[in-house]
Image 1 (tube, rainbow, N blue to C red):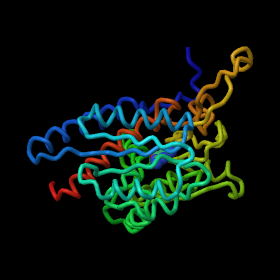
Image 2: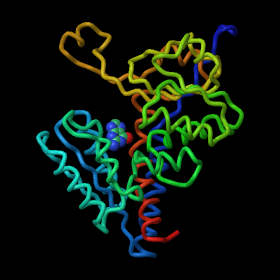
Image 3: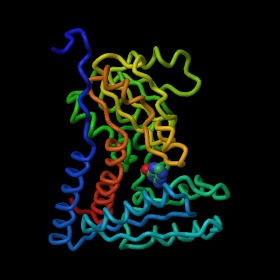
Length: 303
Ligand code: GUN
């Protein structure tokens, strides 16, 4: 018999299921736009250098946009690309009528200035939601293109938790790509939001207040089981490569991907939890496709 005093294991939020749902909706909408309006949404992805993780993400973005029936181009530029060359390419893509979404994969090599690139990127094609215009629209509660991982996380949260209004949410991390925008989206959903970060005092106690806990710090398994309020919804945005626990595999240099949350401990306490891999990460590309369709419709002026 099970121990009646033991905490029930959390429900796992399966990103694969929801990402497939989003991709299917996108593919259906692309078919409709082509037949009713002669409009084929187009996505351009720019990768500078040969960071192995970025190469995998970029390949997946190209493949998935083609699978959804979209026009897709990937520009792979050498590490030695100059700032001027990169800016020229972005300007060309801004002016290309077949392209409705532009994504410059981050991080850029150190000699390139990301801010300058974002400053010239057309906000109407900014499917990453990283330009100042779109960040401002999000902060002001206006329609715009919002960052993909935060939007994907909100889809998962709504599926798991349902109504979010009035819930206490804690976001650990304040990056432009995830922490800040997800805090804004939670606020738009009428949550009471705390943004915690590396200088927050007594972080475990702050996390324990959260009915919704979003981990976006980039530190493997930092958030332990006893930091989590029983029954909380835990969204783990971390994607960290670590050596295998098995010393034999670790000695062979084999690595695996883990989140920012200590999954084994957390699932004993949380009400819902996203796994890594297989959670939020899968939503990011699906929402990127969705943002590209949104951008194409706005640019073409069709509903
Ligand atoms: N690098 C890791 N995640 C992302 C993302 O969502 N967008 C971009 N542009 N670069 C990334």
